[in-house]
Image (cartoon, rainbow, N blue to C red; front, side, top):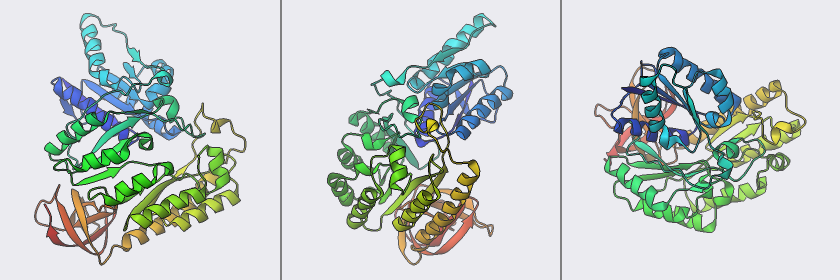
Length: 442
C-alpha cells in the first residue's frame, strides 16, 4: 500500500503531517510523492485565509483525479471549519479535524476494511468541538524528512481571539505539551542527526516555562542551534531576556508579531499592546542580545484602516528597521469579529498598500543582508541551489536567519561552516550571501 501527503499552511501543519506520515510508515505503507499514484492521500489543510481554503479544496480534488479509487483524507484547519462543505462536495472519504490527527491511520484502516466487504462503504467524519477541548493531542516524530532542521511542536490552540483571526475557533484554546515529552522527542531527533531544533506551535508565547525548556534543550547533546517560532511581544520578560542572552545555542533571531504600527488599528484588531510598548520590547532585545535579528508580520487593509493609519503603520515599520517583514493583505474570515466590522477596505486599496509596504520592506531586507558583507558568520548548510550564473551553491542560514551560500566541491549538507561574506548572489530561491569558507566546524 502507498500513501502520499500534502501540507498547506504553517510549520505546525508541517510537523503534524510528518507525525502522520510516520504512522503510515510504521504500519508498512510506502510513502510516495503526492503527484504519484497512491492508495491513500492525506491533505493537511489550512484555513487562515480564503486563498488557503481555495488551495485546500484544489488539492483534495487533485488527489481524487490522481486516483478516483483512493482513500482521500481531508485533515486540519479547513476540515475543522468546513466539515459540512467538504462532505457535500464529496471528494474526501475521511474528514478529520484538529484533535484527531493521531487517529488517521486507524480511520483509514477501518474504511479500507469496510470497502473489502462492500462497494458502498460510507465516508466518515471525526470533527470535535475544540472550544471544549483542554487536552493536548500527543504526536511524536523521529525525523523531518531530508531537512537538517526539525520542527518540534510544543503547544496548540490560541486564547487571544484577535478580531481578524479564525484560528482560536478551529484550533481551540491553548494547550501545552509536557516538557519531558518535548525533550524526549528532541533527544531522539538529535540521535538521528538533526542539529537545529525549532520550537513551534500556534502561540508558543502561551507555553508556560519557556526559559526552562530553552535551557534543557541546550543541554541535549548533538543540538547545535535552537530557534523559536513566532512570539508575541508580551513574552519578552526580564527572565526571557536573561535566558536568551546567556544561551550559547539559542539563535539571535526573534519573530515578534506586530500586525500594525498604528495604535487605533491594533485596538480594533484586539491586539493587547501599543506601538510604543512593542518598540520597548524590541529595544530590550537589541540592548541585551547583540547582533540579533527581529522579523515580523504586518497586515494591511484591516477594516477601518484609513490612509492616515496606514501611513502611521508604514512609518513605524521603517522606524523599527526589521530584518524581514512578511506583508499580508487582510482576508475576511466568516465568524470573526472583523468580518462584521464596517468600513471594509476595497481590494484595490489593499493591493496598493501592500505593494508600497513590500517595496519598503524589501529595501530593508536587502540592507539587513548587506550589513553582513565583510563579516565571518556560521552557516548551517541545508540544501543545494542553482545560482543565476549557473553555479551550484550549497545554501543555509546564519543564526540570524539570513540565507547564505558557498561553492564547494565537498558535500557540506548538515555541516556548519564559518563563511567570510564577500557579496551576494541570486539563486532560484532568492538572494543569498556568498563568500569563502574560513573554517568547517562540522
